[in-house]
Image (cartoon, rainbow, N blue to C red; front, side):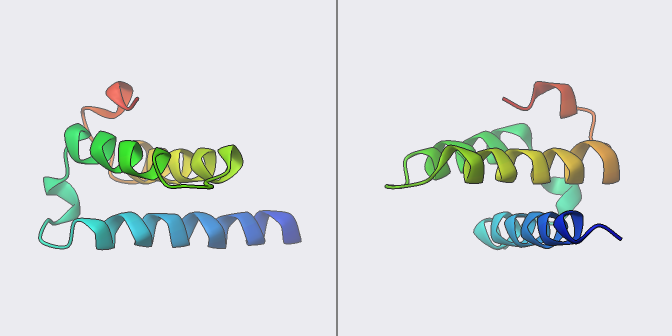
Length: 78
């Protein structure tokens, strides 16, 4: 298996875990597009966040919500 892919996938898993911990009272199926957009807005305001890290967060959560859970609001992720 490609070592770069393994490293990226563990980083993506970490980003998903960070997001899930940010809204601890909800189950995954209860999350909404608004929860996700609020998270992205807060993340974007963090001092010193690099574009590539922000992009990894977005991609990781798109994988979770669009490919794994397959929420009906997936096409509305900003």
